[in-house]
Length: 495
Image (cartoon, rainbow, N blue to C red; front, side):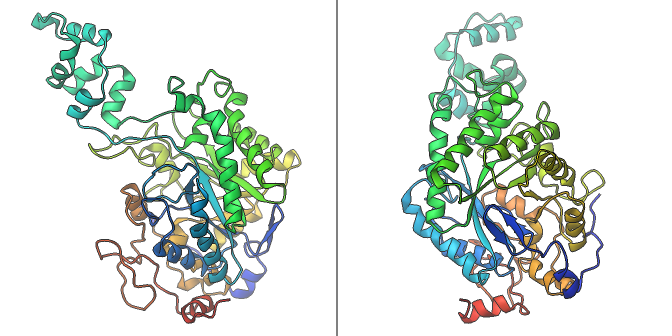
């Protein structure tokens, strides 16, 4: 059942001024001007080499005009390897462009917004191959396959096929026969595309991750601060490398999996390596899952134990998410890669509508449990909560009940980057409200420039005239003429 935007009453400017949402909040040694936060979103505006573009600068500058307490720049790769139009920070050559991003956020917000950057590692994920490509190029036939083929075709009286003829013979079979002849992992590679996993200890690149990742994360964090960012968020959530080490499905047998302590070992080593590299004064936090939302995955009880371990190791904020895993993702089309937000865990992370099972504020129980656990053990680490928070009333209630310390809103901020400022100044009726259709997520899935259906076909009203490659979509949200920040930016008078 699709719901309209949640009914609400917007506050006057005086009410907003006295609220918890617009009160300053300490995060490490930094004071945010309010408890408002734009979390990381990948807009696919970097170059194919991972460099900053004018389009990307416009994207972050536009969010900064809404003057949230903090903006977290998109997931940025720590390895110096090709990764498509995703920002990278794996080499010093990326620092000048990233410095432009941090400067843009500071300037376009008139110094009211802190600029953080999210850094991550991810393992190779290949596109789903055609059966011809899989069997003739990638598959490695073996004796076990010959025996299974003979068993499968016994009624035809076939003898054992020579191994070199197996690829061609397999092409003549049906998918159900492939499933019975191939190993489970092989069939998955055929059906979904090859995906490296942290449990692939026979792969040297995977086996040595504990030796490599602490240094890579530490160097990337140092580059972030050199580029002028106010803080770093380590990406330990969703379908990526560090989340996979934390996952209850991590069965590594080398001390970096299996038990809860084993699964925590590398994430803690990464966090401590970053802390050593950048020093105690530098703001370092992380984003992780309060619930994996997959069969066999961990839930909130484990997440609370993780939170305590991160706090003890020096994390200065914890941002809580849910789901978004590869394990239950939808089977992709041939030529496409598996996308981790398409299964049940993806719906838990980013539902395409807000219904009775996935209410507004759907993750507040997770952030509340984590925050309560931290406070019970004497840790004052701020907890960033998110998930369908798109009104002042819900945000204020979450802060008042102790469900979180900072309110993060991704899709509502995308729909209207000025919404934080509109609410603060008593102009909430002007907020362009997100309808949670996941139009934006659909573009992200196809690695197309992310926009919002509420504004990407609005061409009047001035503002940035940049268009998408197809010329049909606005790349920057329409301007809010009532914004002092927008007017200053337009006239070039923003300091």
